[in-house]
Image 1 (tube, rainbow, N blue to C red):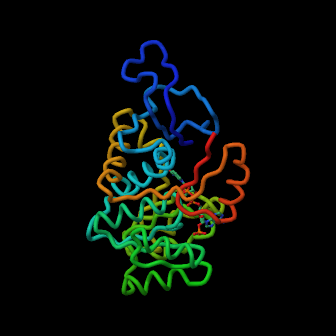
Image 2: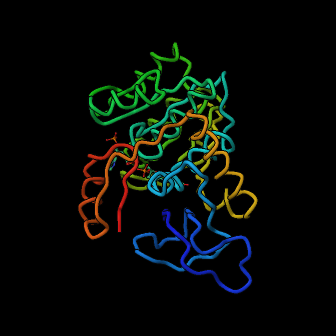
Length: 262
Ligand SMILES: NC(=O)c1ccc[n+]([C@@H]2O[C@H](COP(=O)([O-])OP(=O)(O)OC[C@H]3O[C@@H](n4cnc5c(N)ncnc54)[C@H](OP(=O)(O)O)[C@@H]3O)[C@@H](O)[C@H]2O)c1
């Protein structure tokens, strides 16, 4: 979905992009390539000071963090949130960003090593879900109340526990399914668990217009320029070894962002 590179040719009528410009994008699918053809209004210019590698590591994941924290639920000083896979690609960006907004961030991870990384990137509390009881720990950290919002990219394995981590009227943001899809459920479950809100967002809807795409990307580049979010592109593989990258991701061995270099 996401990538960065240099413009080698432009189509007729394209005025604001020139050959040689460094650009990046988050969709449509097709980034596993050395060269690609892409609509000019879907790419953004990479600002000075940001490398192609960093841009490739953040476009999908960082713009997702942007809309999750700034639009799906407006995170601020009063917010206590739970972010699953806190040491992952989206997770490390989102947890730093949320902390910079003044929120209290509780992150989940699958190993002790990842717990250290999550703590160093904005999490006040980290729960290792392979060893600790998710709901009990969240209740501990929130004095029994639960969090305002849960950002859940795990899916099957964290349902319905994520709902039990919310306070009444809390929001469940189900934005991914690393462990498999959330099973079908009755909507009355949301009332039983405290008149909860639920949404299943995707970046595509939040950046459908050129205006939204540019605003989202600019907000992301801005927090990076100000040093509020540091980018951890922790793994890099030759594009020809994409299979190995997928195996490592599936085995939960990666942290932060992963790059494929053509
Ligand atoms: N809706 C959107 O707009 C949108 C946009 C971008 C990405 N996403 C989704 O966001 C999620 C995170 O993306 P990412 O690239 O940043 O990946 P990632 O979080 O770096 O990797 C996935 C992580 O999920 C955790 N996990 C828990 N159970 C798992 C399982 N059964 N199999 C594999 N991983 C498991 C692992 O962390 P632990 O070992 O620490 O648990 C793993 O490292 C993905 O599901 C992706 O599809 C959604």
